[in-house]
Every structure is written in C-alpha cells, then in structure tokens.
Amino acid sequence: MSKKIINAEAAPAAIGPYSHAVDTGLGFIITSGQIPIDPATGELVPGGIEAQTEQVFANLKAVLEEAGSSFDKVVKATVFLQDLKDFVAVNNIYAKYLGVDSPARSAVQVAGLPKGSLVEIEVIALK
Image (spheres, rainbow, N blue to C red):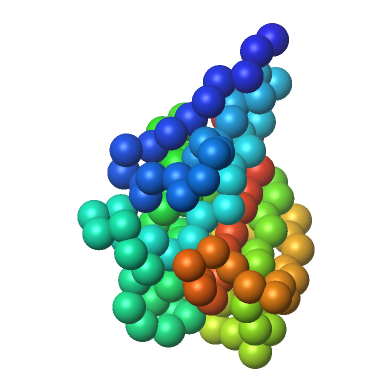
C-alpha cells in the first residue's frame, strides 16, 4: 500500500505546503480544506457566505473528481466557520451537495481562516 498525492488543475493552487488530497491506498480520499478561492483568479470570490460556500463546493468537486471520487462517496465532512451565525446559510447549500445519505459531520467556529475566508470545508470520501 502506498499513498498517492492528488492535485487538481480545476481547483485553486494550494497556498501552502500541502496537496489537495491524498489517496490513502486503502480506499479513502482525504482532502485538504478548501476555501472559496476562484481557480481562475486566485482570489476569494466576491459576495457573502452563500457565494463563498458555493465556491468551496466547486473546489471540492474538482478535487474529488481528480481523485476518482464524488460527493455521493463522502463519509465525513468538517466545516469551519468564521462565525456560527452563518450555520443555517451554509447548511442550506451543504444539503444540495451532501444532503442525500448525509455523511457524518462536524461544524466549528474558528478564530480565523486563510485569506479572510468565511468558510472552509474538508472531506473524507470513499474511492
């Protein structure tokens, strides 16, 4: 067994020393947290929590597809929010992508996120 590093051209470039995801070789894909960076510009998407959450899911989709997985194979998600007042808005968008046979999930408020993002999401998925 060996791990395989995954980097998706359709997702924004990493802003640090990490990869988009790792294929564990054990049937799991573990993604790094995705923030709402537009891959075309390298900047945070304009707009509030809804626009940022949609971009996070677009970025996660690109990473999962590059790894040979998809949203329907996600078994665990972790949502990081700059402010828990955004919980309901994020949940509404989250449900569009992960609402059927919802995976296990944690959601936490954090002191800050990279580039001033309002939301970051990471997932673990089956291959």
